[in-house]
Image: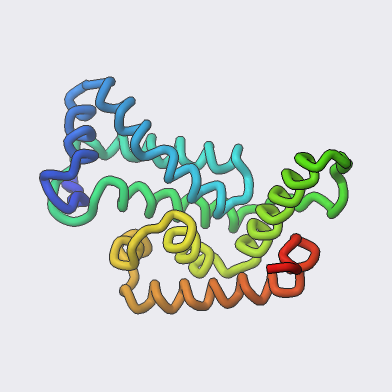
Length: 195
């Protein structure tokens, strides 16, 4: 059997938890899920535009992590980097199979209460961002989500995406320009006319 080498260093707490899980420690598995799932789910949801699909992807990625746990070796990437890579690959595969259905504009009834208007505006802004993200090419969307939304550093993103730091910078810059172009004509509609 081929031994896997993914972890950047023996001090990586995620790798320690994974090693404990490999020996049968279910508490370690729960801790690892609690540490890694929120950010993995956020990336998957941004990539796919669907919470249900994102949950399926993260669950599959974690299952793959559990399967390789006994063969994990220290030396290359962090556990979280490996998991991000698997999540992105699963998202890309899912997007190739089908595109999520888009809800028509104005399908939701509005409430005239001030708090409801603000909530609807925030929801409209997020929906516009999600639509603009989904319109980007996959690699640009990945770079923008990991850099601008998840706040990861370019070297870590390079490891996740298996590309150079310069390629990350280029993809993220092109993605930001694409988002700006997609959203620029909607400033007034999204309530940014006064900004």
